[in-house]
Amino acid sequence: MPEATAPDGVNLHWQERGAGPTVLLSPYWAMHPSVFDPIEAVLAEDFRVLRYDERGTGQSDRVGPYDMETGVSDLRAMCEAAGPVEAAICLIDSANRAVRVASSAPDLLRSVFCVGAAPFGVGALRDSESLLSSATVVRTYLQQLEADYRGAIRAALSGANSRLTEPEVRDRVQAQMDYVEAEAASTRARVWATDAHGEEPGRAIGSRLTVCLSNTMGGPGSWFPTADEMEPVVKEVFPEAQIHWAEDGIVSAPREVAEVLKAALAQTETYHRQR
Image (cartoon, rainbow, N blue to C red):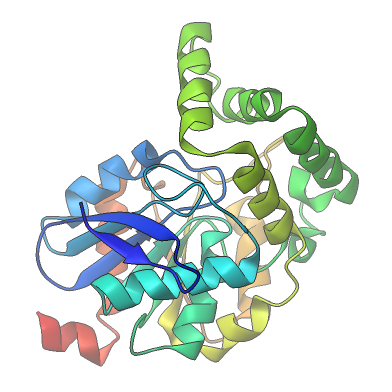
């Protein structure tokens, strides 16, 4: 299996599938790689699809640190080893890292495609009705991640997947813990929650930033805001960003999300040259 080497010598495991313009499925702080399986299968019909394990996860070296600067450096090393990358497909905190690379090295990462997220910290969502709007709730969850990783992951998975049976929840929690170490997950979550500097590089890449929203986002008791709450925040913080809509996310509606990605990339010259 191929590996990229970070500047500090840490080995980052990656893999590829398909052919065409290169897109990167960029992992987020508590991601199990299976979340990308549906969208990878669809994208591989038209793209060369890259996936990688961040340090502290999967088959990459289980070595820190897990701060924002290191995460950005690792992503850049990944793009250097396997790129250039036409678009990074991002969830949650992976967007914050990707816009930094796209802003500083557009030859390596040309655009950032965020699904249900945008490259800012939780402070930007303070006026929403989501759980992320409460500094107290966020602080409590971060403390739980550090003190009781298994319990925190179980609570998050159960809350977001009410149809899972108890054995399914137990298996998912164990898979998550096997893939992402507690220190890596809790540190990245805290770094994202307190990130106050992702907005500038997000604005700097202009229309090369796309945010894909859906009507199924958020809702009462959800961690994340609804799309109706998210859209005006995105427009205010990133006035040049493209905003597209899909029926659902990368798991439930992967083909539609792939079509939205193609529509966003159609605005770029490099994408047309590679077709």
